[in-house]
Length: 202
Image (cartoon, rainbow, N blue to C red; front, side):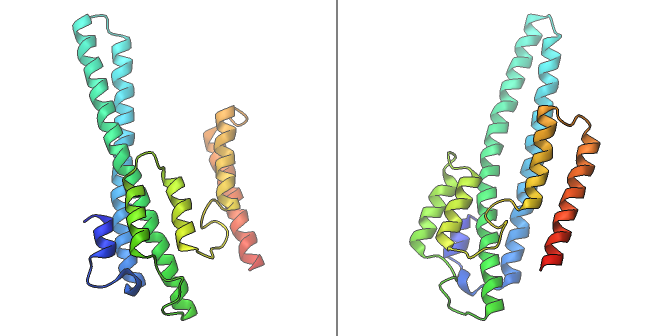
């Protein structure tokens, strides 16, 4: 079922859905996205194998076949990547709506403007979901702006802990850190420290 249909055509309006209903949809979308991500990764590895094989091949006919195989896998990878981008946007939408529901339930603000978005907004979101030029990150910014969420740090971007993980990846990219296991352990340590500091300051 398309997200737009799910948002607009159900008997029960989104604004009336429970957290558990939103969570079920969120889990389904997350599972689909994970499956697509694995497929993209598998295709990337397969393409690398085909390319390496072609580089070592000297028979023209075999090289042509391998070139065709590489092209086909690339086409499939691009198609799946498009689906992955769409699923990511849909998951962001459902996750944000669930967070809003949790905030409303906690605050007992039934009918609050924090509640949900209007049909015009849904139409705009649907167009953005289908637009390949709009990345999940761009969509997230627009969605958060529409919902006007009074979110805490990290809900519309990376927290300090998440930034530490990015930092370690960048250190690996630039060669400042060469051992991946060492980088992982350091990133894990930093994230744990950030979470501990946040808990103690709460």
